[in-house]
Image (cartoon, rainbow, N blue to C red; front, side, top):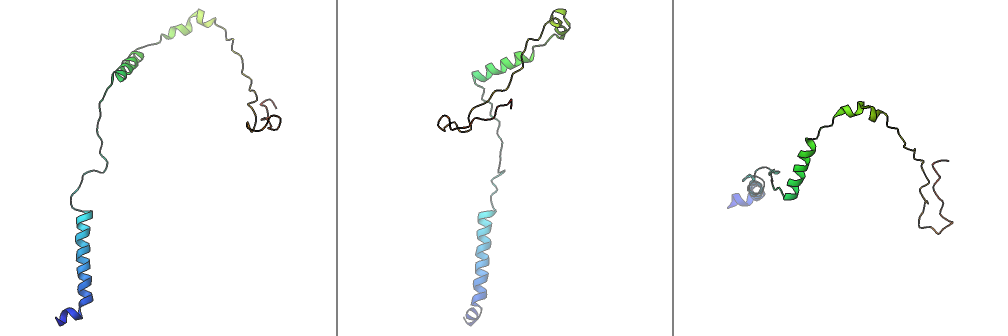
Length: 109
């Protein structure tokens, strides 16, 4: 009994270390639950998906005959496109009363 009273602190530390060891072993090791991140293949194809897949396959089968670009009819086509001129966009503060909100500087300036 005298031995326990003299070494009370040492015994208490040993008991705490043993309890901590078992707690660590129980909570942080032991059974391995496998991978943290697992992948699964899901192959649910709805009718809409099937339609989209068949349309994609049809589009992949389309081939373009490049001889059309060397055709004289194609070569005689003229470009009638017009250059787009940037316009002013609006006011800096669209919520300001009219006449007080400054407009953005125009692209022409």
